[in-house]
Image (tube, rainbow, N blue to C red; front, side, top):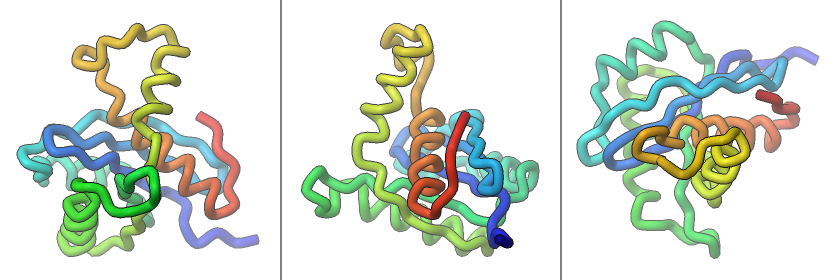
Length: 146
């Protein structure tokens, strides 16, 4: 069966930093990339554009930080604005993905890897982006493995 997307890049939106991950939808593999610093949710676009130029994704995915009841959170509107800016600046298709519990799951996975809760020294934002990407793969019938 032909796949329409081969390389997907995911973002875990935040006000001070944005996690980034990339993956291959055919293989279901994911990889965390360097965290992008942000000021009030605005990244240094030159660095973000450099990552996109390097990895050449076919699709961008942004985590939608919904509340547990499915309603929009305070950050949902800002994440959607970030997604619109990505599309406008890069001309790539952007999809939003429910990211409820991705940070919690990223902290859990980080602890399982032997990191002991020093999230300032070892931020989990790109691991959260990787989990967002795995969610997208799962929702679109792709297996995922890291």
